[in-house]
Every structure is written in structure tokens, then in C-alpha cells.
Image (cartoon, rainbow, N blue to C red; front, top):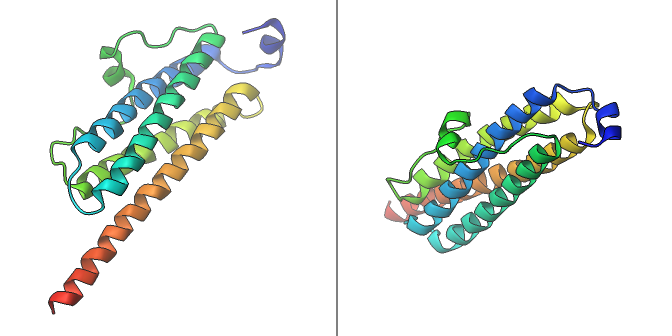
Amino acid sequence: MGKEAKKIASVDVEKLIEMLNAALAEEWLAYYQYWIGARVIEGPMRTEVEAELLVHATEELNHAVMVADRIIQLGGTPLLHPQEWFKKSGCAYDAPTDPYIEIILNQNLQGERCAIRRYNEIAAFTSGKDHITHQMATQILADELEHEHDIEDWINDIDRMKEELKKLRV
């Protein structure tokens, strides 16, 4: 962090680096959860959802880059080993042991909601204190909110499709 940045930042940098490392761990786990889920997914709308899950995975990876860069800018060290991800993450990683589309979507939905809480916390912690981290957190938060919306839409579409199929059987 530069001299002027230190003058205007009135935030506990060590606590912020801890929060950012937790977010970094969560981004890596989210990336893998999306990526592997896209590979094994089965069920209706699989092709459409698979492609979008891969887009979400790429966006999670981009978030990891942004967070790691910010940790370094703040004078910290990003998590250096994947074993640390589970220790530092406040979000669960749900392996797609059941590849059915609704299961995978619900797992990813829970991950997005956890990420929303994380970036909301970071945004609140840095508001008016660290403008760069605050801006990054709100930008990532907007992406996570969009991901939540996308997933909820797919789940609603599948529910609607099930209702329509029930009507045809009657």
C-alpha cells in the first residue's frame, strides 16, 4: 500500500487481509464447484445450464485474481496452498456426488448466498475507509447477486417444467 493510500485508509488492514483471504478461499472453492458441476451435470436444460455454469466459474476465477491482487497491494500474502481453502472458507463446498441439475443448482445457490454475505461484509467494513477494496467488493457483490438471480431463474424454470409435465399426465 502506498504512502498516500495509508494516509487515507482508516481500516484495520490485518483484519481486512484475513477477510480477503477467506474470500479468496471461497472463490477458489466456488470456481471448482461450478467447473466440476458443469462437467458432470445431468437432467433437463443441461446444455444451457452447463454453458452458463462455465461462465460463472470463469467469473469466480476472475474474482480470485482481483482479491489476491488486493491482498498483495495491502501488504499481505494470499493463501499459498489449497489445503488452506477449507480452513479459511466460511462457505461450504458441496461435491456434486448427485449430478442431477436441481441438486447442483441448489448447491451453487447456497454458495452464491454465502459469497453475497462475504462481500457485503467486506463492503461494509471498508465503506468510507478503503475506497479501492470497497469498490472491488461492491463490484464482486454485484456479480454474485447476478449469479444468485440466474440460478433462481433456472430453478424456477425447472419447477415450471415439472408442473407443465404434471398437467400433461392428467
